[in-house]
Image (cartoon, rainbow, N blue to C red):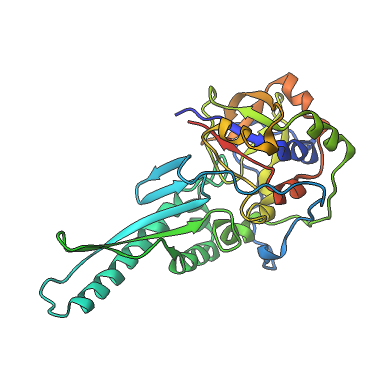
Length: 323
């Protein structure tokens, strides 16, 4: 399965802002500190300071564009949702039809919750870790995810099939949200101190010239994940999006978006200018979710810094994955 990753002008600022001198071989395991902090963090409290001159873009992703089937459900990367269904059987011997339907619906919800919990465990957090790894290693994470599943929202009313004698219920939970997966993982990921940001003159000049930065991973086999990393040609980490996890569920879920059609985005007035397209040289990590850029492209992004939280909040950080 081939993917193309598209990141709007927002990531342009992030790449330089997260530049680091720590050299990491892209194929090595994650070096994130998994020790639990002593204090819990309220993810809802982290909101970026938006530049009033930067137009806010509504969510561009179309649900279902980039969808991954897992044994117990579906991961809708473009819709920022994990969903699962459950089925309950009507008791045909119960003379009280309303009661029989209610009991079957309750049974369907329990099954859907179990399936959703299993589906969530299959979400790739980064290039080396799935949600199930966090749930196995940390009891608090398992408890949080399990609690969120119990409160997962139901998609529409229950569907009754009188001929088959069954009731079907669909549940869903957000990936990036204080009330979703990112919120459940917050104690493990840890969030750096949030500071006010503003648009630099260099960034403004770049936006005057380009509408977006496109990282084309279609030939490299790039896979979607919650927190992809970007490396330069020498294996130096340029950007770990996990460092900005607190912003990904803000701004009306516009911060990180997976899309299967670049033309759909570029047709919007906000992206009317020509984008800068860079080819992903190769992917890294166990799951193929990390990006390795070529030498020339790495150097092109070296000056970019700051502004990622601002642009995320404005909806201008778009991670577009194409099949």
